[in-house]
Amino acid sequence: MKSAQNSEKLLQSIFSIFSEKIPFNRVLGLRLDFTDINHPTLKFDMRDELIGNFIHGNLHGGVISSALDVIGGLTAFIGALNKMEGKSELEKVEKFSRLGTIDLRIDYLRPGKGNSFVASGSVLRTGNKVAVTRMELHNDNNLLIAVGTGTYLVG
Image (cartoon, rainbow, N blue to C red; front, top):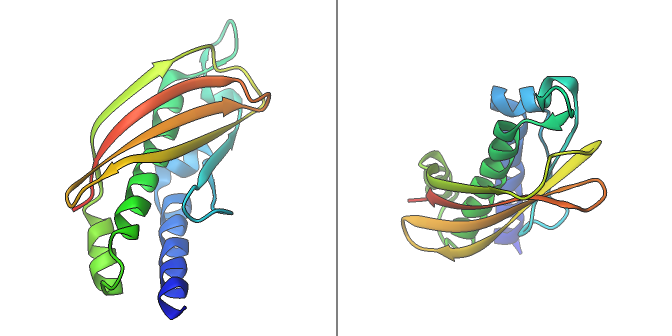
């Protein structure tokens, strides 16, 4: 029980870092929701500053890519964390400090129209050094805007 509580506390600290300590995430207005610890989501609202096509008012592709990269990295870390049962909190924090994107592929399926957006991710594979995730971005009408696959250094 104590291990689960420690892991949850660590995840809350990590989510705080993603939300509050990374300036770019704040600029984009990214908010993490971890109602389900193993399947976090990232939410953000459309704002004029995020428009890429001023004629149509679409979300900028770089915003889409960034949101999917953030949720992909977080998902990869959670996958790595789940494999570290019995490891110390220091070992877990050290693993987080090495987290980085190796490769990111985004498929833009339709224009990014909407008032708000939700990004989610799932782990495809977690190894000792590398994790691969699949990510999706939906708008407030639950339309699939983009999908991505990310490869992350986790060790």
